Image 1 (cartoon, rainbow over the protein chains, first blue to last red):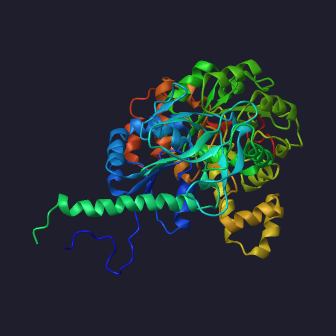
Image 2: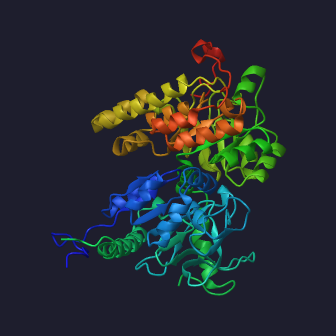
Length: 228
Length: 313
């Protein structure tokens, strides 16, 4: 049987193909991070490109702008069906807002690609932005340096949402809340690993995208039966 | 699970200690500018205009009392806007809000910071408060954007703590020529620095009147250490795309939106054009039927003493 090609002819594992949504925001920083771990990612500006990738990162940026451009350029249905059929997805900061189920404020309307409720600008305005060390479930070694810029937070999680990292309760009465969550192959983080040199979360995402690639490779022979 | 426990725990204490000294640091300040890339920052003079800008997909708004073309027309001294106006705009939108302080007017900057302004533009569009010195921008948690015409001016401002640079162009004209000149000049200077052997860098720093360490940084990386936007005269989607193709990372539009025939439509079109700046078919589609752009003034015919770009050094 020829069908499932999980390794290529040289016996090397082929790499998943990863796209970074390049409508607005710090997509170049994500592409740079992926290049550090040997992934040549593509800038995604057109909806047709979604069918060519195993994983998509929605970068930091301005969530109202990104949601508007996604709608304007016809991404929303296609993005949902790609995620339904197993494409890996990661939203950082604005990206997390974009893919949430619902937001604390009425605007913009998120895409509901992961079952979380999110509050924008949770920590305050830019003068309240900060960095901190964060221990993340599933990331080995030292804590990660997390950069929070006008950052959102996960206020509630639906069933089967895995919380990977939280910020603790504070003296002024804010409860412990999640800043990194995962369900299946969908990942969301409040902070910006792409502004650091730490590639560990990007490596985790590449693994999720690779699962998606392998799944797609397994499916293919059934969908297009060979006549040879 | 992460470093958490219950209530006012050791975890909370640790979190506080770790995060506190980092507030307002360089990466956080420059980081917001990185989030604005590929976007359009629009001048607005009322909360309603700010909503129009946000709905059109602006990544940020610049809150001010008069757009540059009105400042140019009215003459007189242009100052920081009324805090009521700025706060009204901050309350009206969820996107970051910028505001302008006069060059060297550090008290206007202090006031803007206390209002919660997300980025301060130390701007030549307002009448300078100091003929010699710019604000010491390192002393603020609020990040700064500053105008520049060439690499020396850009690196001097970065040396003073600016976390974002924009071309000066010639504000309030609707004429793109000086923004193009400044964007090209900064790039030409960067190529010179990058292609020069290291022993020549000190002399380049002298010639450009730029901090040596930052010249070395540009030599090493081939780019500015902060995000670089275009500003000054952008009036159409094609203008925005032109500057993006020349190599800036986003655009400021001042008078170009709310002095056009149909501001909401123009704002929306410039946002789209800044995303698809490299796609002529898309740009043609975007540019259709927008009505008149702002009435312009030919910037090359403005005598030097009436130019805004020569303010600051």
